[in-house]
Image (cartoon, rainbow, N blue to C red):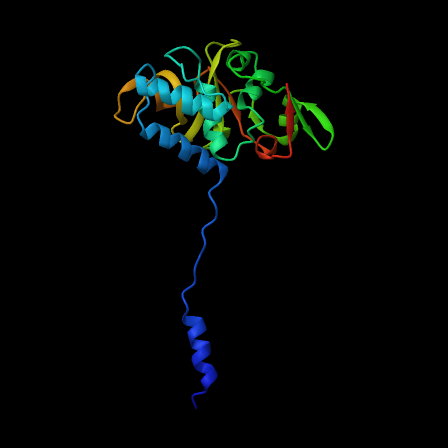
Length: 235
């Protein structure tokens, strides 16, 4: 076999290292990364720094209206925490995760009271729909009967204070253990959540819930209605 000049070029090509570009993180990964970053900062409601972060960064980042005078208990901010994390993941800033609760669940108005201009209609291509109908058509509501086995990391988890209550709590699903029937959540504004040091506090934290908890009401998966900038909203 005689060596040919083209062989050197061929070998150089096949020996060239292959660069693999990893896929961009999904919205679920980005939302949970934003939640984890807040968790790592050890935010406690009622402390001067905790009040500042909750009012200016979390509420301000969720709504565009920073509350520089936030004080412990001034606002129920669990919905703002969820919305902040989703906005870091590309959530349409003209939409509101609270509007999902407001129009689909009787207690959603409690969170919506603190929002400015919470939308009730989604508009795209000239079609004006009640936002709950738009969400249903997009398939964003995965469980209205408490079936937590449908939950996936990044989903919104709705918890009622009591069956049929108008008041509740929203969290992000952090992980799912189907074998143990347990749901790990990351949340803000709950007095029984656990901080990074493993101590219970009111702030940003994590905890594990049983899927059989009768107050776990719904699983909501953000959809195109939430992330597509082509959607317009009106109150």
